[in-house]
Structures are given as structure tokens and as C-alpha cells.
Length: 137
Image 1 (cartoon, helix red, strand yellow):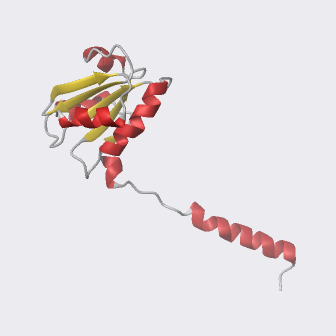
Image 2 (cartoon, helix red, strand yellow):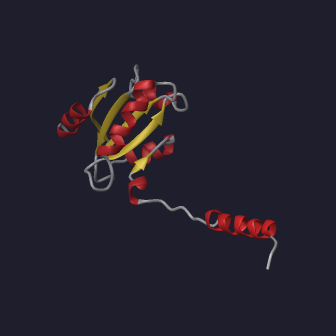
């Protein structure tokens, strides 16, 4: 029989082992959300026109409080079961993309379909306004 100190040490190390060996995997929803997209990803998904679904591009900045509230709402209405994909672009990291699409205020959401801009809105919108925006695509 092990002394109590050794017994507790043995249980402590074995209880940590399963968590250390835990593997993570990507879900289908994560693959339909292109968060913090690079310019290359932006060009491939939003501009090449090969996507079967419209792509909502959320131009945001980490310091923008309305952006922090809007992005989860957009995540909720996009994904594999919906008719839309979501891409987020940090304007501080990719100012050339923001300039190209005339992003002058944050947040700005631009909808692309078949490689072309179909619609856009600027500023925070609630769930009802987002649903109305998606209905226009």
C-alpha cells in the first residue's frame, strides 16, 4: 500500500493525463466562418465568385465596441445551415482592403455574391435589421 502523499501524487498526475491528450478538431461551422481573414483568403472567398453562398464581410477593429457586439450576431445567422458565410477583416491589419471598399466607419458589413458587392451597411444593427438585410440579398 502506498503512503497517502504518494497516492495523492499518483492520482494528480493521472487526472491530468486525459486533458493533456485531448485533441481539438474543426467543426463544419468553423469552416464557414473565416475569422480574421487575410487578403489572400478575402480574394479567394469573397471576390473569385466561386462561393455558392453570399459572403458577409465584417470589417472591424479590436478596439471598436459596436463591432464586438455585432460579430456574434452575424455568427449566429451564418454557417452551413444558413445561406451565408461570414468573414471578418481587421481594418488595422488590412487597411488596404478597408480603403478599397471605402470603409470609413466601423463596423461595416459588405455582402458579396458571385464576386460582386450586393449590399452593405455601416454601424451597429440589431437582429431584426440584420434579418432584413439578409432578405435583400
